[in-house]
Length: 94
Image 1 (spheres, rainbow, N blue to C red):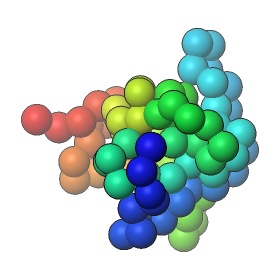
Image 2 (cartoon, rainbow, N blue to C red):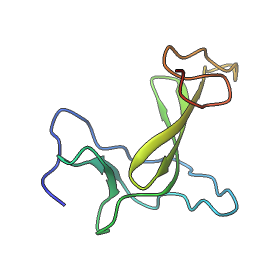
Image 3 (cartoon, rainbow, N blue to C red):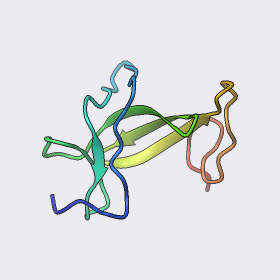
């Protein structure tokens, strides 16, 4: 799997929500030097959803085979934030 990419902090999900067919992370996920995200203690790249709060912003990130595929964020009032690189539905902008 390679080492951990020290430039990217590990993410500890808080209150991960379950979506049918998409398991939540149960521990910390981190990006390794191969550029993929792994859940600590697992040998394969992470597939699932991570929900966490950072600086009063709630984040929801979806991963498939270790790659981030969708991202959404909401402010402290529950209003969805417009993200530079992501569409409102969470898909990446072209």
